[in-house]
Length: 167
Ligand code: FES
Ligand code: FES
Image (cartoon, rainbow, N blue to C red):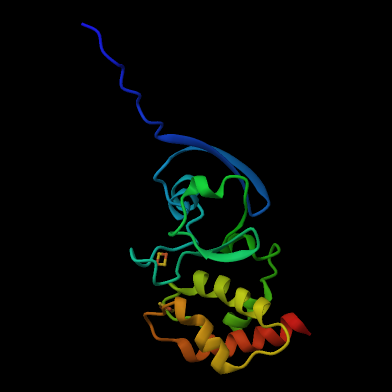
């Protein structure tokens, strides 16, 4: 019996990227989300998953200099990218000014939303270097949920970090 041979679709792809300054490479399933790859393959569990609807922002990281929700991107789409996660922010024992501002202003309760908040907050400061007010911070934080509802101190922390980062 003869017949056309069915091609098996390729289900894995080799991806390479720079994560927190280190070059990494792996075979990943085509359906693997970037957040899964970071957490499950690289052990970078500081990036959290707080929803399955791309709403909570707990998974926010930087890809090629821009904050993105890493549950909205496939790992293979980040091939060749420069990725920064919460683990890549501090310089040894010295916290990033945004992390320090969150600490100083008691801007966390359970801490679940904090990594995503910090990453998004850095983006807010970078987009509003010249001036930043409370209304703008609240508006730009709409993509990040804090289930402990600690927004007041989060906003205070971001405004404090803005001063520090733009001084
Ligand atoms: Fe990505 Fe909620 S886990 S937005
Ligand atoms: Fe608990 Fe934000 S500090 S979810």
